[in-house]
Image (tube, rainbow, N blue to C red; front, side, top):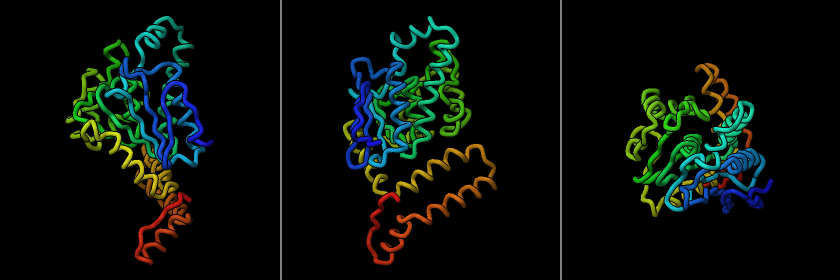
Length: 269
């Protein structure tokens, strides 16, 4: 798959210098998600595992907001009229989107501004790194629409990011987490000015794309699989993973560059 050749139908997508940028692009509605955009994002992230021309991806939203979550009229309304098999097919699809984000080897950077709510907050949560602005407002507001907070992996992932107590509060109440809280609690990696958000995200993405991308994929894999491991199993898994990385050409390139007193140029293999 050539990620740069992919023509998105329900959001904007471009690839430049190894960095893919996905922009939710319904700014007049604060970039809500639809059945179609859920499915297309799931398929795109699944395909990125075979995309050698995309080494990092940035998630963003147009018009000063990230995403307001599932569209009230195009998703929530129809869901109230569905039978259980259809509802389960939908919740499996949305969960598969998070699985695809976590499973793709590329680091995913979420560039967050303004509203980041519901499934939008889940997309941010599922990403590897989150940059935000002071006006970012994040809310896991499922209880506000009569649903449980356990949506799309929230009860598994959010406590690992911000702690059990803070995650419980957000998931039970559906209240907004301010940008300052998000940074202090470890949800946001850092806050930047709104006008500098995309430049900061791209700068970080380019720095990661210039790194040892095979090794980055290994890091992401271990971050995922070690959730369910004891310490001994995790150390053994990392020993095997690191031994594999030691066989890569990038490892040799780094050594040769160090010996020659120059910066290494990684090629991802």
